Length: 95
Image 1 (cartoon, rainbow, N blue to C red):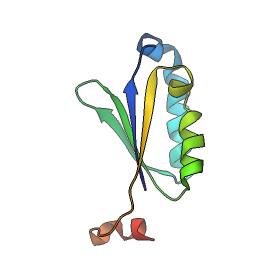
Image 2: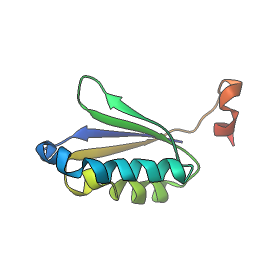
Image 3: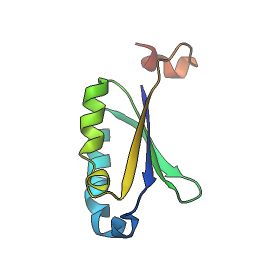
């Protein structure tokens, strides 16, 4: 499982120009069954993604393809989590 933090960077003013492509990237992550949740980092710091079911290399490749990352609008930090215990509603993460 991965927690990905997409923090605004120097090219933040270009965000509006690439927002549609970024949203398409997010949609693809959900369509592929990799993304579990996306949301905003508060206060207005960028975004976060929870992802699962792929290797470290695969998530790095996916994150590096985000148009916001490509254009330097955000910098990405990927944290890998090895779940040890979870609520039964999250059992699928334990596999």
